[in-house]
Length: 96
Image (cartoon, rainbow, N blue to C red; front, side):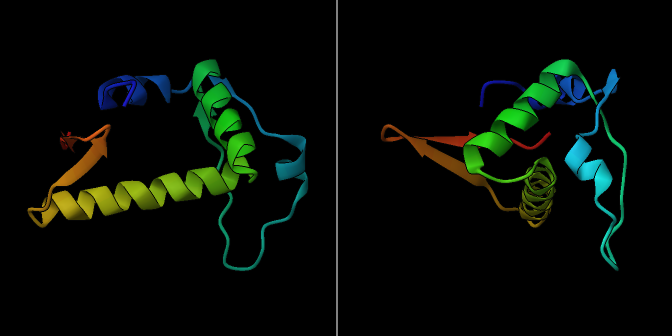
């Protein structure tokens, strides 16, 4: 991972509020909650880039990230470990 979790948290700190025209024009579906989130310019660029690379919306990228964070948290709380293998080397992702 390129940034530490505290660095990512700081990056995600509110400085610029930006909503895309397409997302603000859509009415929420029944059972869906709309939220406004403030991102730094750098965090917004990362979100936009991820959405483009994945061929999806920024909202979907955020939903995936929330789901992944929930999984990490549940894994760590239950005593599990999260391991990543890259180029034959295994690294543990440490909890915050």
